[in-house]
Length: 291
Image (tube, rainbow, N blue to C red; front, side, top):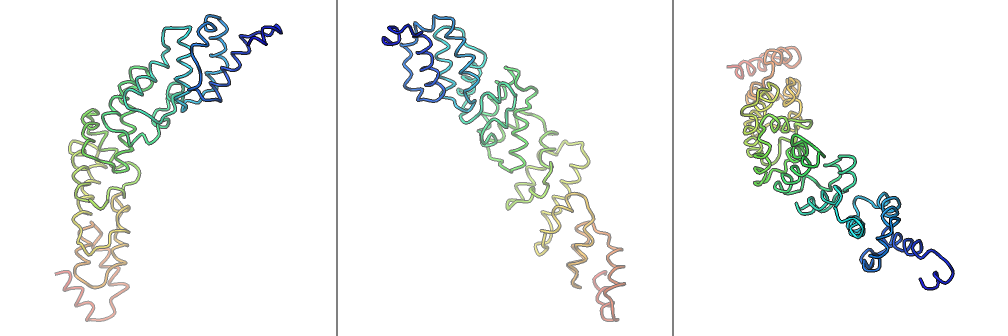
């Protein structure tokens, strides 16, 4: 700096260049605030920070964001809305997120890494913060994450915190049957049905009610029935007669499956008579099945 002064070089510009480079590219922990207290009194200090630094700091680089605000506070004591929001999100328990996408683009769930893995208590807190700052409204952040959690079947005991916060059984019911209905069938089918029935108990959506009924049938299907080909078409309300027909092997328990899965019994019998009966013995066996 002394050398710069001797050669009539603007020491402010020189020092500011060092600071900008450190803030954008260097180790922010090495920035010595005491060196810049006097510089911060110069109106150019704030202008340079805002014009050249703020826009070039990534929203996911929290250390540089915090350093920027610390430097800004050298000349402006009142915190910006951005800094207040960031502080509240960190205090609520958020860690990996792109702050700028949240603040400027209102991309909440997309900007948070593994948003559906957040604790329900944290989701509820963040949802309130987003509403306070007009980032989202009507619990839309909590609902969006809730839909992901339900779809992925990440239903832990503390999920009840989020459920009680939303207090919307109709919405939860719709989440259970959105897009991939086959995911309803997991290894813990009994627990899945319990969850589904809990959130569809007051649903007025006939499609959802019908799917719950069909889910019960899948759960209570005979143990020997191979369900892999039946799950999606049956839950989607399709007739699975052809699938059952392809499995028919003249055993009475297959006719039980026909009835269980609401197939067109008359059609199946007609097809059997037309294509598979070749003698009196087979006809007698079919009649025995139907008795």
